Length: 305
Image 1 (tube, helix red, strand yellow):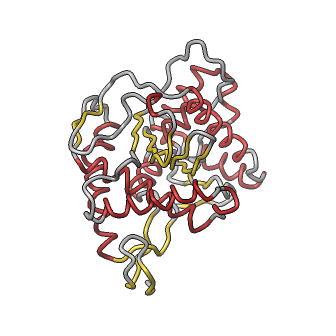
Image 2 (image 1 turned 45 degrees about the vertical axis):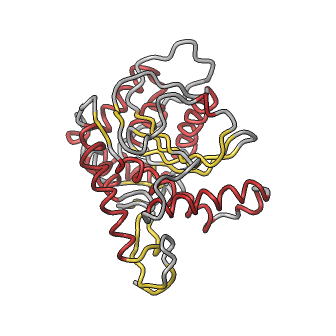
């Protein structure tokens, strides 16, 4: 630990080594893979055991986020993955989504050059979203205002009718298992994107056509996560499909030596792989795409940010 300003409360205190995407998510991905290894998309030749961490939070603020994560994990994440199809949530869900969106936004603020890609107005919106999300997490405001959160539950795709997009052959594996994050911007929208197994969390910074989203907005007090009709912009599905294709591109950069290690590991853990969640996700891709699905297998490679 070392002393600096806490990114959440801004006090000068000893800082904890905090996860950007919560640790329990990576723990689940490891436990449900073939052999418990992860490879980050940014460096697929390196095996890792955990997600990105930074010295960002004091002990008190780390405790705030930890309690929020526990509620999400115990009340929604694990029950949903076990097949519970109707889950009632309360304010903890909005707080969890805000906490994830805020951490991802903080990562892009601190580790990318936003001022080179964003104009003054867009940068001002980012500052306002950052402030609103922090005030809500600290209990200094009752709601994050216009910077809404959207939660999109996911599972295997059985079929897609009238799909104009050339679908990525790892699409189910991406939706069901991959951890990913992004700060997205177009002429009409700007949002924080965090993909975790079976869910997409979107932190809205600017949206000119909010009526294109139905069923995804996280309510403040209570709501239900259940099978229902979700309406999303077509461009967002194309974005997800592009993200899946990006994972194929990243996996193709794995060195011959590391590919051999993956194959050896796969053969050594084949019995563990069969019946695992990773196996189920790959099966769904094979059923949709046939032999093309083998262009990106998941013997070990659960990409993460």
